[in-house]
Length: 438
Image 1: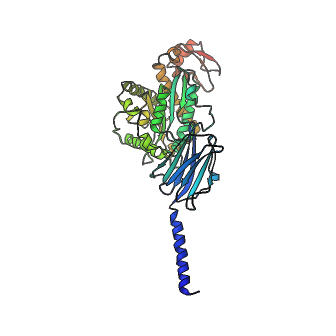
Image 2: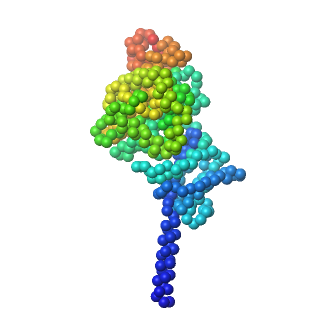
Image 3: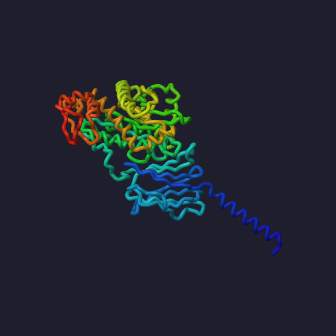
């Protein structure tokens, strides 16, 4: 074969291979799934902005949502994607429109409403395509109550575990995620509240998924919560700071460096969490503006300050306090119009405090301190028609681990008064023993 023909063939093959390679300008590098109580989020991590189209096949089973990624290669094994959602049977590929594209099929258990939107790259994540499938996605848990299970005139506490899903929150020196620690503390707090006959807890986030900041405030408003408690773990650029703090809403921008950092961190949460900012920024119901100008907001802010003082008093008994007075900042999560506090349980950026926050015993003590502070407030200022109105003449059944001093603190009384009222000659209590509360 003449030399010039061999050169022509080689150049042609090189041009063909280069052209074929350059057509696939994008790639799917990872797929993640986040089931929540009322939706499942599927996240596709891509190397570039997604060029996609989609359609549904709802005429017969299996019901399918089909996404075509144009000029995109698949670099992840879909069979290995963890699927804990009640909505999704499986995720698989199908024959693409052409060789340079990828077709992904999500097989569904029902005809499901959904939203699909791209999310731009940020400091932590690259380009993403997010699909939110609507419907009950996880099995019922024992701790959290659904909105329809809340009882009238039990004092209702909405508990907001910060971050979740794609937003890990702050990350400690050993790699601990804030989202995991605060969820455990929140569940412990919910357990304690639900064991109290006068109160009930509603967990805004009960698993590893993200809830938008405004959606958290709306949930507290929709269930008519008497108080919202948002649980977080602090972080700083230096590992030295440590200790807990409690924050309340201010209608102005924070004036302290830490307050400004926390406000910026909160705004970043929606970006990391993959919220469709085109929708979330459209405050159709005017919750934020309405909350800040409504006459009831003055009461909510002053009540939140009082609750914060009570919680600080009990936190001070089990933790170093970074701040011994309530701090002010403009947090979107606190704008429900209900009394609200944000508890920073410690500095996850401090190596010693990170290990403390990872301890189950410390998580329980922190939850107990928050619970006792909340209970102190409602004992002193009982909502109309609630059990707290008559709790001063109540009886208490002794539970495992309780002492006279613990019970006295809970009911704003003294050990001496309890002993006198119940004719006790010692401090020894028996589980199941019934005490009259003075």
